[in-house]
Image (cartoon, rainbow, N blue to C red):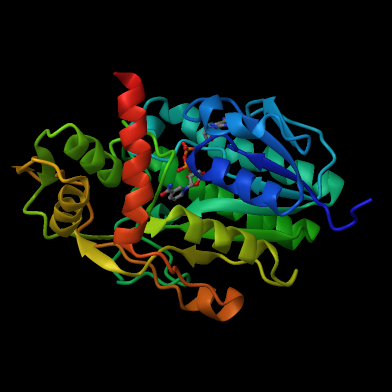
Length: 318
Ligand SMILES: NC(=O)c1ccc[n+]([C@@H]2O[C@H](COP(=O)([O-])OP(=O)(O)OC[C@H]3O[C@@H](n4cnc5c(N)ncnc54)[C@H](O)[C@@H]3O)[C@@H](O)[C@H]2O)c1
């Protein structure tokens, strides 16, 4: 018997990040229970894992209670892009809040360690750049993004109260913009938008003049941070920023995508939406100190497999 083998529950396991985490933890010899309600995730994302005897798939909604024996829980279930989380905002808040309550309740009952996939959106429209974990944020409680931003903030509150009140072992990661294969092709995010437009030789839509900056973390780097924070001493809870501090203008990203795809696309400029932040960049000092982590994959390197993924997806759809 393998005593180091852990039973790991991954909620949202058939989504973009979840499917990569399933792969990684399976490869490390663990027993994986992948839970998903398939709102934005798909079976295609994990179909190659279904034959593995250490992999189980459970169709379940985290807003309902669950009882399973596990050692660790990674709570990723939640639509992540504005198009998806604004589709049913009430359900988004329920997924964040009831989902956290149900998974924390489960962790308490079975004494599991639990990770929360939080977000840079907890900083809202920040007045501090880059954002350290100590910054409390500037969030609109009643806007169109609030179902997600406030839902994720409330989930963090619940995690810390379970830690203080019930001594639960918690780990909170604040994820910044991440990209890679298995992103949803029509989720309205800038990386997938640009790649899909470039591969179809359509105009690339740039909002504003394209001088606003973003940071982009490749998925493999992010998964290293998930596993890294889970392995920290029980006393360490986070929150910990996880993202790539390298900044690129949106125009630079568009030009890089055109170059790698060899596309004939031209840039098409549209007015900047009112809630579009001009700059967002993680301060990852804490991650460097605590888990010796920093992203190692450059944007150019990470775009190659991402473009290859979308290329294959689009050719299958023809
Ligand atoms: N990708 C990013 O850049 C990013 C940034 C910040 C935070 N996050 C967080 O990371 C997590 C994963 O994001 P992702 O990019 O993989 O998104 P995703 O939409 O691909 O994955 C989310 C998964 O959760 C599932 N899900 C949604 N509601 C559910 C529910 N009620 N019950 C069970 N399953 C449910 C979806 O079907 C999907 O498989 C999310 O919690 C998101 O908020 C992601």
